[in-house]
Structure formats: structure tokens, C-alpha cells
Image (cartoon, rainbow, N blue to C red; front, side):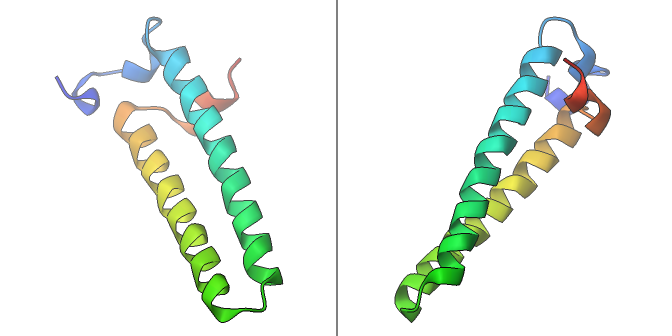
Amino acid sequence: MAPEAIPGAAHDARIGPEIVSLFHKLNNQLGVILANSELLESKLADDTHKVRASQVVTGALEAIGIVQHLKRAVGVVPSDLHTP
């Protein structure tokens, strides 16, 4: 059964906390990648390297979007992410 077909999947005691923790950790790492690639992009003078840094920024933003989509698919809501 697909995760989006499981009512309350994010609140299931067996999988919910692990999924919430995984999304939190993944978002943290993507945030680090995004911040550093944006900083690098802003400091580079060489256009070729700037383009490559821009591709990393775009990839990080796309990955963050995918995580958001996955969170919605499994029923993780923003308030779940702040629960210990």
C-alpha cells in the first residue's frame, strides 16, 4: 500500500517519529548545502564556476521541494516537525 493511502501514517507509533526525524535531518543537510552553494556562487568571479555553483543551488532547491512533497504524501505536517 502506498504511504499516501495509509491514513495517519505519520502518526503511527512505529514509523511516525522516525520519518519526522529523517525529514528534519534531511532538511538540515539540504539547508547547509543550499547556504554554502549560494555563498560560493556569490563569491565566484569565474562564470564557469558560477554556473556550476548555480546548478548546485538549483539542485538543492529541487531536493527541498521533493522532501516537502514526500512529507505531504506521508502525512507529515509542519507541527509534527517540532514534536520531540
